[in-house]
Length: 117
Image (cartoon, rainbow, N blue to C red; front, side):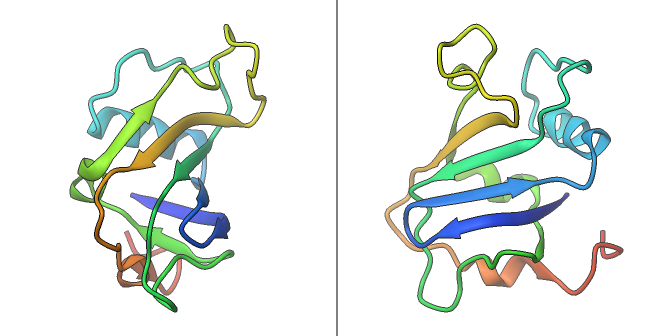
């Protein structure tokens, strides 16, 4: 699956997006998440606490190919931005937290263009 880096603050916050809502739906299925809502058009993924070595973190404006194994070290929070919460979001779909202590070489997932699937 391809993800687009919208924003990155080193060791603090990463915001990813997808090409379109169909891609997000595919990822949702691959990850075996429950309760896919096809009428919900929000697509942004908030990632907290992802640690990357200097010059090996994600860069804004680039695409990254992140397979299912990549996501195994994350804890997902589907309630944080749900419409039932006070802090509901109109653009964020899910929040995730990176759990390992070791750094992630995010740059190794970079693709030259979005046609690389």
